[in-house]
Each structure stands twice: as C-alpha cells, then as structure tokens.
Image 1 (cartoon, one colour):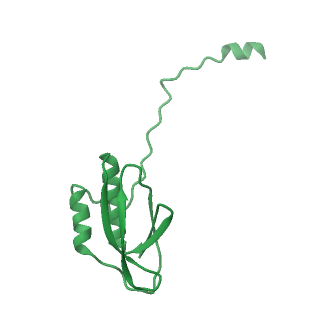
Image 2 (cartoon, rainbow, N blue to C red):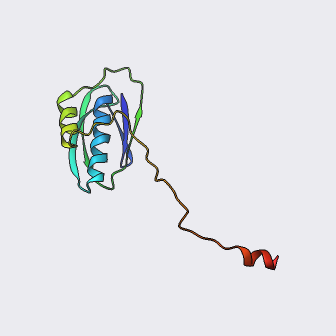
Length: 117
C-alpha cells in the first residue's frame, strides 16, 4: 500500500494506483494543465472510500510505501486510464532530475583583491 500526502491530508491506496496518480500529476505539471482524479482509498477502519484529487502544475504530492493489515487496493481500469491520459508515459519509479550546472559563463578577476591584502 502507499500513503499519498496531499494538501495537508494523507490517504492510503494501492501501490499501482498511487504510482499512476503521481505519474499523471507529473504529466499534467509538465504540460501546464490540470485535472480532477477520483481514486479508491483505504480508510482507517479498513473500509474502502473514495478521494478526489485536483492535480495541476502547482500540486504537491508525496507517496510513501506503508505496511497494511488490509488487502491491496486494485483498480486496473483506473491505472490504465491514468497512464493512457499521460500519453502512455509510464515511469516505473519517480525520477529526480538535476540540471547540469556550468560556470564557464562567469569570469572572476580577483587580482585587485590580492593587491590590497
């Protein structure tokens, strides 16, 4: 199971659902658009409920794995729809991308400082 932290609350759902939701949120952000997504969640008492997420360029989602005594939530149709909506872009795990930094454009001349010391 995965716990999704969103807008000051957290929700437990199935692994595949959470991964598809985060992937779709990434896609929406990259395309500067938004969408509303309704997913099944596991409530604290073990019953199944629903949560609706408004995802967009400024959405901040965090998904973390969590052990649960309840069965895994599955919704293969929803997972397929979310990946299809993100143009079939399916990332097996979140990617961290850091820009390559280059300082060659900067030129510093410290010769005047050395003379005053």
